[in-house]
Length: 206
Image (cartoon, rainbow, N blue to C red; front, top):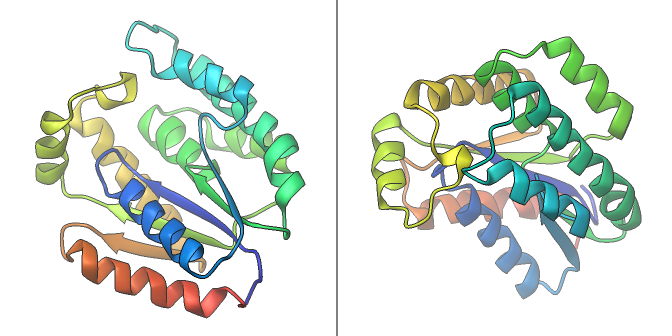
């Protein structure tokens, strides 16, 4: 158990990732547990500027440039947010290193070893204590994207791309013990809430 664990939220677009993040935030608020949360790309003021560049629909960067900008954002977050709050507050991260592998390697076919080396250069041996992976079917993904009022650059890939990314997430989850998989297709939000809170009660020392 941890008094102040690091919890990462992963998943493709419309998978319920943000909903699950909010479930955890509300739980921590009710328990009066201090936490800090940020998103990737994004986080620090500088990283948020990078996010705007990356997600702007007018941006025409290639996959390698995207990778470098993502990692630049992570470098700023690691030095200014993670190190500052590690084991002092619960740290909630909306996307982290596994997203880089899922999107830039499985989705965009960039070299996996290169991504691993660059990520280690930035964060060393740092690892989250728990990763909550949200899954969504292709049918539901299509429906939910069509219902979104605003779409950014990463909402506009073809559906084969998202399928490859989700396969990547599943492969990562199967290799690691600290993954909790939440399937938005099978369970209601309320049932998933029960599953998530039960997991939190098992890992957070109150």
